[in-house]
Length: 317
Image 1 (cartoon, rainbow, N blue to C red):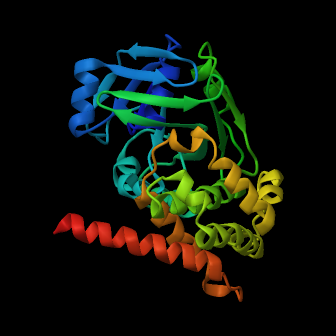
Image 2 (image 1 turned 45 degrees about the vertical axis):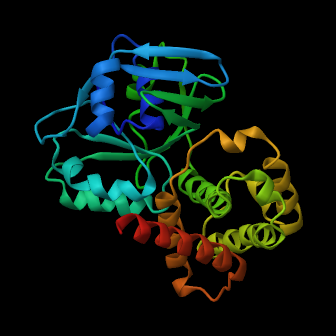
């Protein structure tokens, strides 16, 4: 089975490592710049934080997806704000099955863009892999629980690639499952991480400062209720239901956040505020045709976006 991992960050690197365990898989990673050089020179080097082990794999590497390069399956592992940048090469490529893996707030719109531009029919699915991590030099430190897993679903039609997925994940100990409510799950998850990452960004990932930031911690706790209400007003369920129970009531949400920021797990994964800014933008777009106010979300988002824009202008100068 010829498989392309389009994106060589933390998500793509762990997925490639897992798929390489099946010797029938011919795995290729698409990477550019220094990451491509590192993969070609040192191979795929991962440090598994909780498992206390290090792995090294050899993997094929390309820097460009050309139209006539066929793969049985393409996994696109990128940040939410980067998916639109790869629509054109994916649409032009002759491969027929593509799975977008990662945070996603508007899956149907992304799928429509590819289908509109593609000269051939394609099967587009979406997935989410529960891994995080950090990078230091050529080594990616992976934070994961268990052997690895992915939720997958199609947004517009019945899934028809169950046998293909079973085949590629055979002998890998990595599991996948069909999640019929994946669109709602992805939106709910996007809200979950957006609020936490906004706090992280405002306070430079200082958990102690976040716990003692009465003003913004209160805003974050109330923001969950506001944005969950917005999603439900647009016809989306909060999935899983436990997420709404934990974060849907401001008093409980504040307590949960305080407890989370006492744990070391909150510092074990790298974030990218460009992705969070894109999620905030999508949430603001959802507000355009509903009569709901979100003052706490607005306050938190405005403060984080203002700081982000300042950092971009400083970097350019």
